[in-house]
Amino acid sequence: MSFNRPDIIRPPSERKSYFLPLTSGCSNNTCTFCGYYGSKLQVRDVDDVKTEIDAIALFTGRGIPLPNVSHVVYAVAQGWDGKRIFLQDGDALVYPFPKLRDVLQYLNEKLPGIERIGTYATPQDILRRNSDELKELKKLKLSIFYTGLETGDDELLQKIGKGVSSNQVIEAGKKVKEAKITFSVTVILGIGGVEGSEKHALKTAKVLTKLDPDYVGALTLTIVPGTPFYEQWEWNEFHPISPFQSLAELRLIIENSNFTDCFFSSMHASNYLSVRGKLPQDRDRMLKEIEKVLAAGDPSLLRPELLRGL
Ligand code: SF4
Image 1 (cartoon, rainbow, N blue to C red):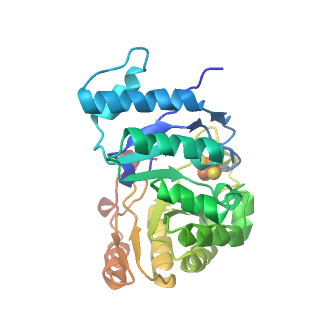
Image 2 (image 1 turned 60 degrees about the vertical axis):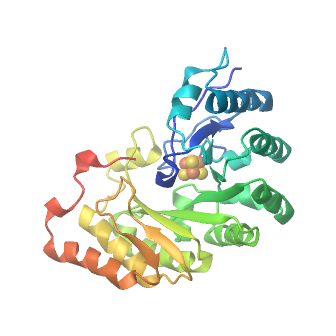
């Protein structure tokens, strides 16, 4: 079966990257809120990946397009900064280790100017790799993992089908830090609904403190049609929080987490308010920004619903 190139779904900080698919879908397709729910994992052939790397190298180096290579490759290459590669798809770290090493070696050989390679990595993918393997990946410039914690509330983790406990995420985080791979963690405001809001925020702050990652990205829950979450919402079994309640969650998380040196951001397009800064240094300023909007209670200070993105 031929490989179906996935749509580009990426972290905000990877906007200038070249998007190189190794897989399509997600191996952990059970998260009830996620567009990858029920997706079929496809693993791309290494030779196919290498052909694409050859095409990028030739095109960016000498402006020559290779025949029989998808026009998408050149469209993506045109917006590329030449420095960063993002491996697709939902959890590209699931790509079998020998193949992943082979692809990374080839990337380094053909595109020696690249500075950083990044990927989404589930805690399960990370735990499957041993420390030496992770260190080897880091040497080959795979130096940032984006991992979804979503919530630190174990009951909720189970309910949303993440397939891991908070302790397993913490264990995975330790391995990432030990390998000196930059660790970027996302949490989802509103994932606990109205009833679980406070518990979700407090438990998330607790787990984030234990993880002490380099980056935290807060997203706000968007209920995606076709997911079990959507059905629960339609059946009135899930009660979403209001935009202002999402700010209250954000405030609770920032107030109750402790980091050594973390860049915390709610700049993602799904959020109603963007705040960002270094924690702990910018905590007071960030909390004041949230407080000001909460106190005003003026919806015009929030990102309009129409402009929110996934
Ligand atoms: S592991 Fe991540 S990409 Fe995969 S289904 Fe869950 S949230 Fe979606």
